[in-house]
Length: 281
Image (cartoon, rainbow, N blue to C red; front, side):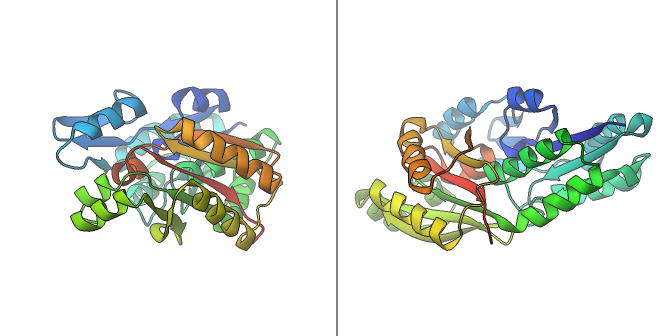
């Protein structure tokens, strides 16, 4: 009896990563003015940010419907197999509720375990990697789901927004605030708080970003038994020195990175970077 791991594309695993980890990826959709695109299928991250730069209206993401989940779940439950689906926060989208409906519709739904990650992007991806590690260690679907539900409350995610253009476009800040913030090189700080993306502060300059990160990690110490995930949106050259300094300062042993996708990218745009990790508390 096999245990299958499932996630949605808001976890920001690439198709190649999902294949390497043997994870089933369910693709969200992104709506631009000129049409609807399937995330990771007919629009990749480079194309998303290129189209966003030209857009006069902010793109939107749409949730997966119950039938799409049924189509993904049913083949994996054949032959008595089990499955664990780690999905984006139920507080950010109705996608998780669609999965709950689908679970009641498929045959063998009792062998399907749904985990509300209470996260998105690299925070969600971090839990997916934990699920893979536990699956490869021989844990059952129920054991994996229980472990993830304990870990999710300790996932810490912070990111620093490099451009104020899209916050202004979305009406989250005024034009005058955006103009002043750009002149002063101010970066808003966002975090995942109780399953939602929240603005938690602002910093000015790269050194302050590093200091904020280290202060955050001092308040929420890193559990070094788990991988630390770094992420960026079209700014690898900025994230890499940041990552190297954080890794050295915190003595991080195991780390990886992914590019932030549409869910964060819609409002943050390019130039955003940060990290996600499992804390000791």
